[in-house]
Length: 313
View: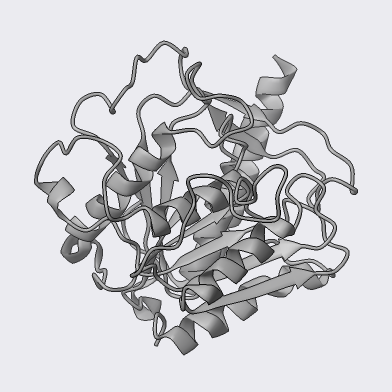
């Protein structure tokens, strides 16, 4: 019961912070839009993981993560959704990013790597589209490997966002994807697996391109082979891969920086525009929070990169 009280309090605090930030920027008359991702059940979904629930993240020390306080997680997701946060009208640029929170494909770090990211994106005039993808990994998705179903959700999400571009004030060629930790892997997988869908098409939305226009991966995992200095099996960089921005902590024990370094090298060899930032002394899970640490400056570097690539005016 006490954990539920703390969870509720955390949600109230985050909501107040987001509302405060919105008040500074100017607000819209409507609340964020929530859209179901699939017509009917999602592909390969048995729905037998229990009711969706919220809990607090585990307590970790400074050697493991940059944000040591507990934050709100979501798990047991069987009904994927998009939550659309649009910026103030006077700041709107037409650029959008799908947001993929991390959590090892077990949970979604909804507060730190979801809602807070949407608020940051809104502050720079970008629509944040928060993807609630399926977790935890199912019994046929082995521990230690990327889960299969989240990529189905992410591919569908890109196509759905593009189909709603007129309704949501988006420019169809400025729809990117940003992910953190396991969500960083999901962002990279979506950016490199656009040639073929990983599910049987359902409707007209699935005829629309699922290739994001750019990808941002922050302390991603699952990119490096377990015992070799090369990309993990199943990962490659095909022609047409969009530009990629990578940020990582140099002392990340959960997902070592080699994951981003090897991906950067693969992108460079393939001729894909890419930028890599590795921050000395930084651990995992820094999200977009401002701090006295150099890793918190990655957001400013990312904005400069987006402008240079033509994704922000």
